[in-house]
Length: 110
Length: 114
Image (cartoon, rainbow over all chains, first blue to last red; front, side, top):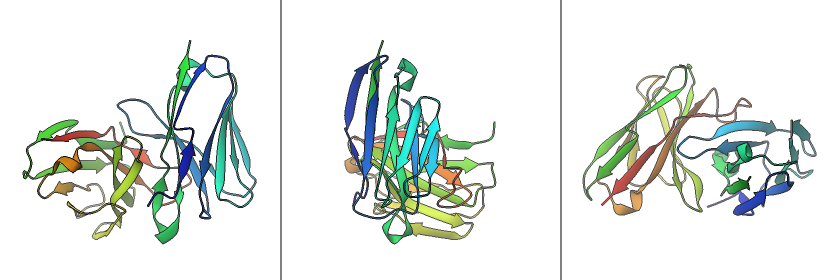
């Protein structure tokens, strides 16, 4: 059972463009995490959001947790080639297990 | 360097063979878990452990066994490999299941079953 659906699944943009990826669920999550994974490596944590409506910024990355804590978004401003990777959302859901989303594969073209 | 160490990095098995994927961490994390990653499916939880001597099933446990005799080690055993188990396997650890500091992942084991 996949509780976290991410969109889009694939995204290819030019360097300097802005983009937003989404993480949606029908379940309420107590908190959500975002990870970035590069080829041949394991995911690396970017941020944890805890409070409904919370917004966190990490340089050019802005993370938002939905008011109802069922969705989250990641916005990247002025994308760079170093942002290329697989972006994963994750959280504790039904059955007190930690679930990962389906992932968004981002390619930033120079 | 502190972190999660997975071995081997690549493995090819014949159908029906068994093997053990090794995972070790040196951060004194209580929580350890195994995931498999398949295209379009994200990371799916196989088994997890909240401490030495305690293990539980995740979303896709069939065909896999685990044990946790020490805090540091959490091996994953494939009992009788099947082509459907071809995947990339990741071990992860953290202080707790929902640690705000996130999970630390190993670099993965790419397994092919022929």
